[in-house]
Image 1 (cartoon, helix red, strand yellow):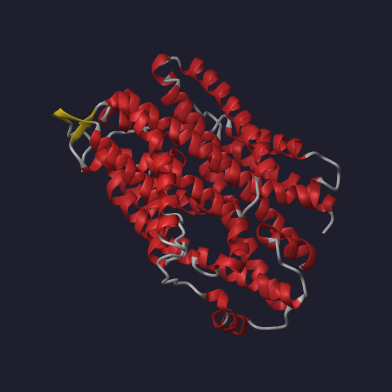
Image 2 (spheres, one colour):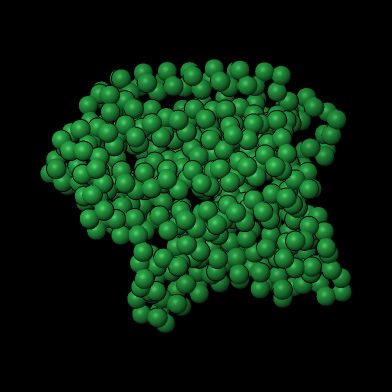
Length: 490
């Protein structure tokens, strides 16, 4: 597949995205940008969130990860289902009851302004890094297979992508993204299904035979019982559960789409549907990963060191024009999906939580729109900077980096919301930022201590739970015993 054809495909897909943006952003206002006027159909949100939940990380990294971790990621996916149930039954009712636009305003009501600002800053940090990781992954692939051919520097490629995303999200915001996500989900799933079909055809086999081959191989190993292993199934299940609670339920990006639904009932239907669909979808990605390794062996390809580039290497160089074209469309969809809603959510949090422009310019719709637009642009520049920085420091599988980092930054959010929802204690608000900052430090030291004390023990994604627990304990230490608050408790 030629770089020129890929570039034309990119241009046509981008044009389609802008047409959707134009259609959905007509008569859009600030409420449209922040919460889609609370008028999004739940089934559209649910379907679109599949792509947002997968993003470039699942699209690229999970198939490549099968080579070293086999199907153990599926245990994390099962944990996701439990986590979505917690979000649906505990967090969503609170958010709708309080009629929130930014979910971090809950912390202001429950604890005070220092806690509120702390939660907002940790979200900004977490989502900037997370969105940048995802964008870095997919842009790196396009850079390797397309833009390097034309001598375009990596940083220019990043600027092009982020500028396009900034343009089509700047007016409609979440109202636009709810609909563009449906397109992106469709093409990401189509790319996986078509690739499976092409590999079966190229290997002159049948789906049934391939299924049997995969299940008879070491790749199909799901459960690791060794407690010292970072892939231990108990660790992975709990990690998946709390990753979902933190990275979905306590994340403005994911919750902003849910809060755009008409009511709590619709939002819960969206969440339940999403959790059930993600199980087979993620399994397909794992199955594809095993197939890619079998096909690579069939072609006598050296897969050492490929990991994140295994899928694009085979799709673009060994599956013909149609297979490569479908993959590229899926990859471009993953690129846009990785950053558009994140950019909108980051702008929302910066506007409402940090700058509090909604209060300062209440009743002045046009002024707020202009200020919000400037912050949208500033946030785009920050993400561009971080993505380019990753180009210099990346040296391991993206998905492992993402979840490991998330454990340290989402942990304090997990502890803060957990303490607020499940206790009636108030806290000495001014000390909350210190607790939140020290939590990742103690979490890291504890993980090193465990690995030193228990020879061979590897701390995995459970670091999220550890940091959440440390934050919870820290809040107990600084609790205000002279008074309690019941606002927002379960």
